[in-house]
Length: 204
Image (cartoon, rainbow, N blue to C red):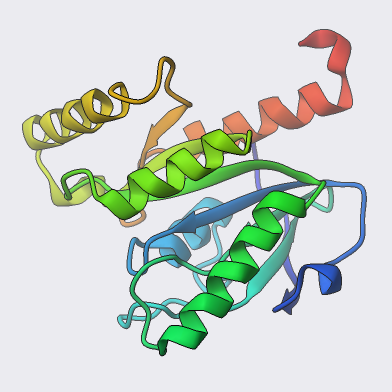
């Protein structure tokens, strides 16, 4: 897929305030400091589209970006650690779950995971939440450039083995590096394939 345009549309704290449309939405979420904004900027080819920060918990709104004028990329607040108090965290949790569970045009949720880390309970619990509620999702391992090939292979195998303890079948998995552009075509082509199937369901 070629990204010809990426436009910021809106930021909201409530589901009912989000843009009303009939296009597909592909949302991105992950623990704070997983590299979500950098990944979004890499995918769209616009380094200033999503705001990046060295401080975790930068995204606290539901951000909509219109891509190629025919689908939406949605930047969701991260879960887990953020530089806000508990009531703020509870509000973010309610915001995210409200969107994930009730946004009819949500087509796929990309869950970002730092490939350098061993399986974290907070990520595993979130994936289980998605599975229980029948939310279509994929996993994107970020920061692949921080490991050599052997380390990356080992870490991904550990994660897959851990997931297979609870899952009979794994969702699509992508490996990316925002710094090196690794995985960009894989993720965008996956989105393009889904969009084509939505437009032409008889071709599935």
